[in-house]
Length: 72
Image (tube, rainbow, N blue to C red; front, top):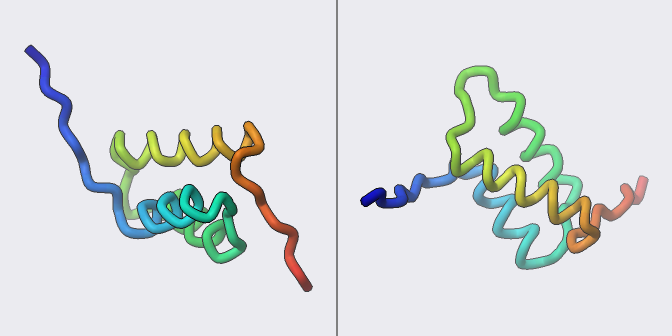
């Protein structure tokens, strides 16, 4: 019998994921934090992080999350 393991999501991706889902919007700050987490060359994303990234991108693609335009 296989058991599912729950892996903690690192802070930047976890915070962005939580805020985005709760507010149904991905802010400019969230986008920069997301980009920094993805481009961090010092470590690789684990499976939980990859799933969070996939879910965020899929939700944006389906239109359930909005990406507001910059105000400047």
